[in-house]
Amino acid sequence: MRPSQRTRILDAAIRVTERDGITALTLESAAEEAGVTKGGLMYHFRTRDELLLAIQRHLTDAWEAQLVAELGKPLAQASPQEALEAYVRLGVHGSVSKADLAFMVESVTRPELAEVWDDLIGRWAPPPTSTDPRDIDLLLAQLAVDGLWLWRATSMIPLSEPVRQALHDRLLKLVAARDADAG
Image 1 (cartoon, rainbow, N blue to C red):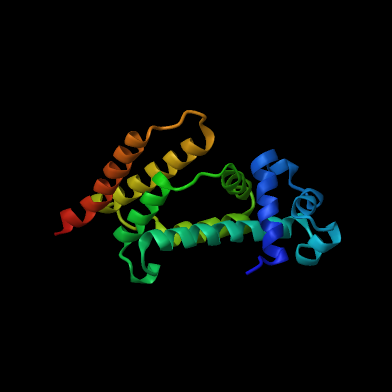
Image 2: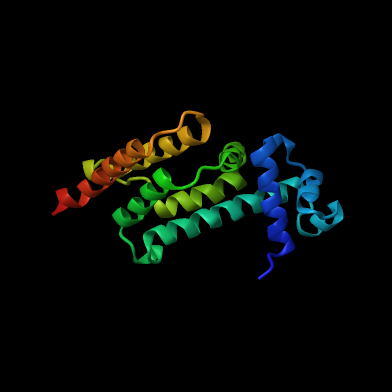
């Protein structure tokens, strides 16, 4: 199936950002990268803000699909531990995109953009509602994997696969400790 022009534009805008940074992303640069006229782009996105919001949704939809694939079942059928285990596996071994990071950072000062990311994270790794050590362990695992993802996105120093696997295994033990303590 041929991708829609809208999807092609979103993917092109992400490529511009990955290659040249978010400040280089304009309606013109996205249209040129997508091989459409500026008018063709503006049919779908009248302003840069509309384009940015659509990109945030496009990226979080892709993350959600990867998380569901990693989980192996719908999120509604998973326990918080299973959801966070999928989050850990994807965070440690999944791909890292500088464009994803750029769009996340862009959302920090824009509530309408931040809401898109907050919704995704809230479904997969909701903040604890208690100070129970098991709940805090889940938060620690999430913060560690988020920190690792950020480090991978910003560092030129790669981690060896054995080190990444050791981190993965340790984080999953931290997540699993929740059920071991409860049982």
